[in-house]
Length: 292
Image 1: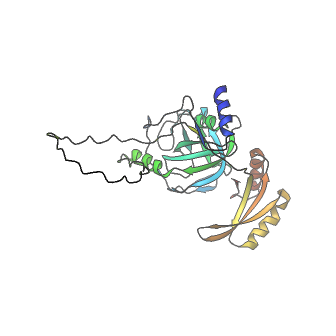
Image 2: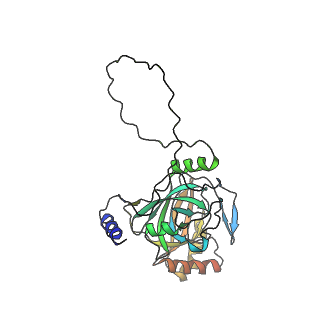
Image 3: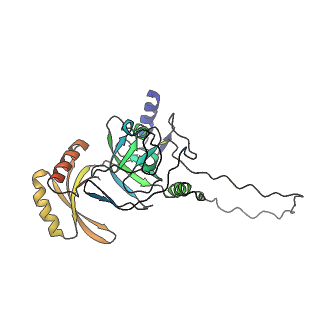
């Protein structure tokens, strides 16, 4: 492990995307267990509504946590047995199964994980990864990390087809440029030609490889609300001023203009959790931790 850590530090200092294999990680292939494919209806946990949906363009930043021994062996939300040593994760809204790329924004470590469970049900977390995934991403001891989570669309489609029992679509490969036309050759016909056997279905699985990505410094904020009316945003900002530095940030979502009211930046995840808990107890139940 010391050798691995040394190699990781060396690669991280290169400033470019690198890859390092990790002992004990899975090497692809179909999973030992395949749960059912699920998206699900909107549901409510602790007063918060979640709206599951297929979202191939999903790309969000936030705080990740991990779960392990207390859940090892239990059923996941799509019917599998949770294994804390597998490269899996829980997400509140993405389809199960689907493939995501998770990047630790503090150290640049990035790995692929398979979503097979629901959670975490907290305004301060966007994904809950397995124990093994937390080790590879480098935040097992801290317990949390600022991360970027992106759906890998084609591999997610493969996983969905496998779970449904359908034909698995092949991954698209870049085609080489066309070669110059060759001289005509005489056609030879085999006496007994046999059709080629149908290729076996293969599914891309998390490979356990750590990719190092260049990351920019990021900060933690608490978003207390988002409004289409600027005056409503200023009123909330005025009420929140005693809690810290408040910003009003304009944003556009699907062509609609919003004004986001945010407190921060805050120094740590623990501080963000404490401030979030206070806001929720004061009635600002839609508040959440964001990374920017």
